[in-house]
Image (tube, rainbow, N blue to C red):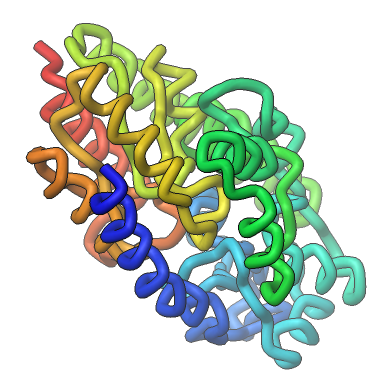
Length: 336
C-alpha cells in the first residue's frame, strides 16, 4: 500500500502545474457595454451562468463569459482589459465567493446590474457533511492518518494557498438549484431591460421547468443503483450526491488544485474496496494521472464525469452534458 501511495502521489505532483496555467487566460471575446445591435450586454463569470444568461436572454442579449471555454474557473485571473470592461457591461452574472478575481473586479468597477446567484442556489457550507467537506477537514484527516503533521506543515510553508471557499460552490450539478438560479436571473434581467421583461420571465420559466424535469430524470435513473458511492477527481459533485442520495468521495477537495496525501489515497482505496466501486471518475480539465494510477492499482476502470465548470465540448451544452453524466453514473453504479 505504501508503494501504491507513493506512485499516486508522484502522479499528483506531476499533474499540479498544468492545472494552474489554465485559469490565467483572457476570454476569447470582449464586448463590454451595450452592443451595437442594441442587445443587452451580459458578462457571466463562468459557463453554467453563461448558459443561464444565454437561454433566458435569447435574442435580446449578447453574452460573454469571463472564463474562457476549456479553462478551469476556480482560480481565474482577469486581465486589466477585462476588469475595465465590467464597468460598461449592462449586467454581470456571478457567484459570490467562488472566483475572487471576479468578486474584486465587481467591487472595483460597480457594473450597472449585478446578479449574484448565491442566494437562489442555496449553497451549503463546506464542512457540513461528507458530500461537502472543507479543505481544512481533509487536511486534518490526512495528517491524523499519516502521522506526518509536522512534515505537512513544513511542506506548506513555501506554498501559496488558494482562497478557501466557505461554501461548496458547485450548485449547478443539482438541476433543481439551477432552476432556482434561472428564475432569479430572469427576474433581474427583466429589471435591467424592462422593454423585454416578458420575454426574459417567460424564458426563465420554461428553462426552470426543463431543469426540474432533468432533475427528475437524474433522481429516477439513479434510484436503483446497486453501488451507492462514486469516486471523483475532485469534490465537485456534492449537490448531485445530495439530490440522488448517493455518496461522493473526492480524490482532491473543493479546489481541484489541492493534492491528495498518501493517507487520503489509501483511505479512498479502502472505501472503493468496501463499497464495491468499479469506476474512478476523471475530468476533462484535470490531469487523469492520479485517478488512473489509483484505478490501475485497484484493478478497476475510469470514466469521465464532467463537473461542467467550463464548456469543454462546443457541441454539448449544460443539459446535454448532464445527461451524459447521468448515463455515466448509471453505468458505473450498476443502476437497473
